Length: 42
Image (cartoon, rainbow, N blue to C red; front, side, top):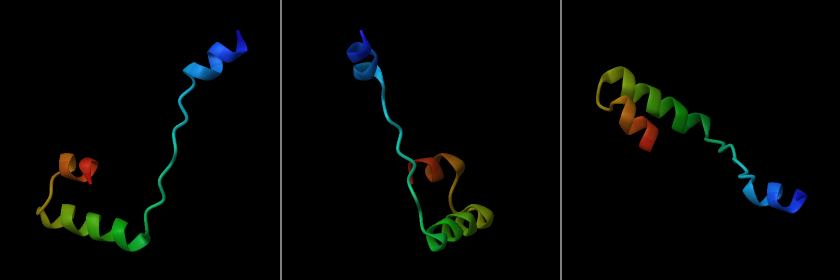
């Protein structure tokens, strides 16, 4: 039964983004050139 539980478990991996990438996305949002949905896709 433990094997079935392990097969159903999906590991979520946290992605690390560079500070430069994060700041560039924030700048785009603040300037209005990109929307929230576009940020989510990015």
